[in-house]
Length: 331
Image (cartoon, one colour):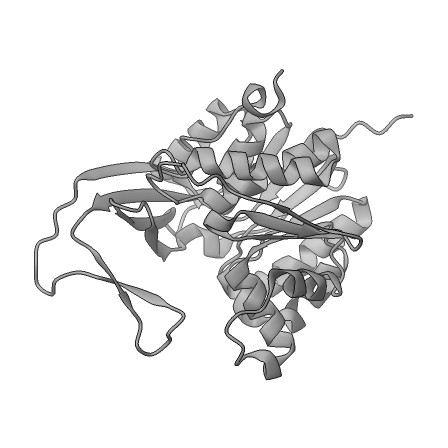
């Protein structure tokens, strides 16, 4: 009998309500404590004018669920939303985007996760204030005979996230499901020692350069004084911990990937009008994974990931600019 999974991919992680505020009254200044960082500043005590305000669905699991669904995959999302109107609002959006919602849970104690995003009007760069809310109570439960080719694991929050990593590991091993892993802030800060088991069975690891640097430095503290590790070194080091493919995104510089044989790179276009960078990483993940599943070509996957990310940053919010199957695959 041929195995015909119900889903191409199940996304696991966050679901939040994003409020996005665009302003031109902010200033970007150097951080004198850490030269590699910058700070967002406003006049103390002032009333800051917001030129545009928007609200939309966000969160890693929801963004990638919508992104991969638009590109033609059969998708289910596993996230913990609130049991109130906000949770129903989020579920309704997912259903409209043809994402299966039967794996969602609705928390009766905590509100939906919330993000307040400040967007620099001139450059489109964003700074995000995050309240995890119901995401902290996520329970990773899948039916024993769930059919899926892939799991996509996004950022996890709450005190139980190490247990959740173990649960995902066990599910993938027991059911021979491929894993794409995009670790969140808690996972990155915990370092490679806490991630070594899940990385050994990860098919695709997706991180940005800053995240990759922190992970490598967590394993090798002696290199922490080096301000700039090359992306090629980062790719090879992370690959040595088990992922079959490592992908590092660099914003305007594009993205690079390593599969153990070759380092591939794909540049970003320089003439993009950036409106809002929120969700660019999730959009890249959606385009990259869908292309890898459909076409099985790493160079094409990199190109399509970047195209999807470039489309998202031309609109406000993490999902408005996500491309459809016809946009990437000409069908």
